[in-house]
Length: 278
Image (tube, rainbow, N blue to C red; front, top):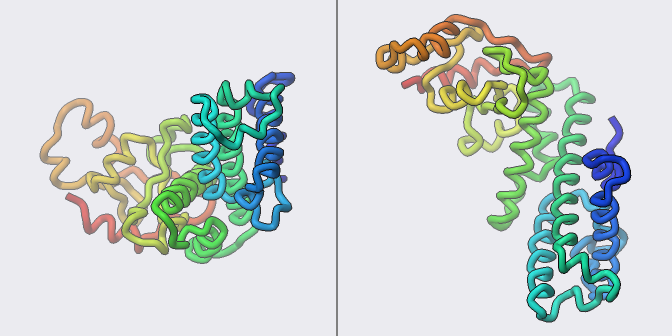
């Protein structure tokens, strides 16, 4: 799987010949010129060797998104901004917010690059979930201390990467019901993200569940036994007897999950989860 360029990425998102593709690419070129003229190139790269479309750090992109949006607002309100440097023939770009839109699209591209790099790392590694987790945390700088904004960006990217990899090894199907609609699938952490740094990106700490079962799992209403069969909490079995409960929960009691292609769910982690059934 080859890593794409930003230009290839936006072309893949819109019909061939779309004016939106041209506008995004042109907007980044305009911003590159403005950043150089305003002596702001170090915001992109401290060595001034990169253009915006070559950035690979999601935190840096998030900072630039916020900066460009603020400067675009100033320009639209007639205040001095970095867009004082824009070519008079190109003022429609900041006026119509094409510059902010392009940078936001760049952010999505950088997120996709992180996911691609993580996938390459997973596919090239014949290691335990724990060792892969160490590599992924280093790749994404998950454990790096930073500002609240930096922490939020790294958490978001880390969770998106975790979901992408987990859906890959579960073939984009709920391991309990077989539902294969990606929009309703969740990457369920067995040990929650907030409880342990070391298990956050460990694929052995994940299950691919559809939204209903993810919510029940997260609230310790269901879990899985030593043979990966669904168990219901005693409380929920006593409290609910409706037809819908029987349809969506009791019918699956004792059913074994479909196993992932690799990185089987850790029984050590599941034991801890089972101990917390309500």
